[in-house]
Image 1 (tube, one colour):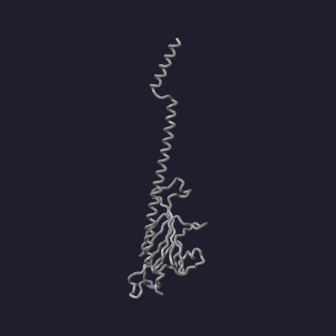
Image 2 (image 1 turned 135 degrees about the horizontal axis):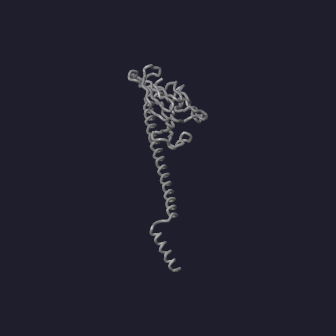
Image 3 (image 1 turned 180 degrees about the horizontal axis):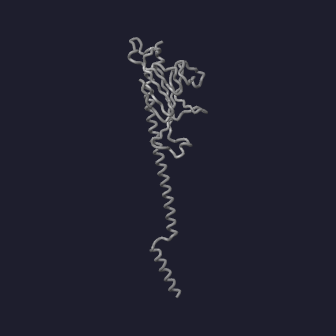
Length: 225
């Protein structure tokens, strides 16, 4: 009788194994599969965030370079920088063919004839005004900001007469008194491809770029008295 029961028990176990996995094995499989899916999902999210940041930075960098290239061209041709220029606007005077003479390559600074070009910070964009037309040349400006102040400082001015004792060489916030060169600082945040992370409104962004450039006012320095 005992031998018959033993044979019956072995037959039941073999039939159970051949029928499929047990409940415990199924639970283990589900847990392992869940962990794998969670890891793949996290990896995909990181890859998407990195791609978004990359495209945002690339787009912001390209836009900033276009702005700086246009400003460089205007600075190279400008014969005077207006005294009304400050940290948020740069006013240039460009020569016209009517004011050029055979004796001087540049028109006099007091000449009312000339093309005025104005670069102005409006909110988070920089506009360029020329020939009574204004258009946006760069967007997404978020800085730099002064410590304890929300105002953005884009333009700074190095005077003609340098103070060697000043470690900043007398950098000014206005162009009064003559300018040797113009320093441009911009911090650009582009969101064309989405936010860099969900909490970007409360946490620092990871897709902003910062650029600094200096343009010599060579025509103003070389003008005839």
